[in-house]
Image (cartoon, rainbow, N blue to C red; front, side):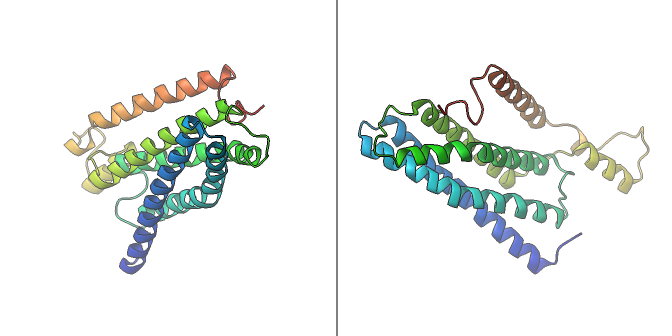
Length: 218
């Protein structure tokens, strides 16, 4: 389904606004996370933890959902498609990954904010959770910047589905040589290898009990 030009522009404007807002809100969140870990002032630590809860729930969360949904609609409603080109699929996977991790971290972030609202909260309380939130904020920002880079440069490369569609359109047989654009580019292989290593690392950490949404809540 191809959207009309006016609807496609509206969807694109909404997607860009939500995506840029997500990056900006996460940058602010990162500043609060750094303050919560590095500051020696207990009041600043408490304020930063409370601000992280507000920012995560009421700014980052809705922007992430809006970015994901409008991105899917924009891809399906344009000639790019959702799973035809490597950069579109990679951007989708990165956005889904960032959204899923955010959903997993929202309850601990909310718990941290609730704890910070208690008068007895000190700069040493839940330090493991605050460090974990800081690390995830850095990782999330890198993921979003990578997705933004893919959207701007649109590196060449077709998925197996895209190659099949290309063959159907060109009338090439199953054994015909594929065009150069159908060859798996180096950036896709590097992206896949990095993603596999990341999943392996996270899996090992979760099995060891040192990672996960509630690992630092006690």
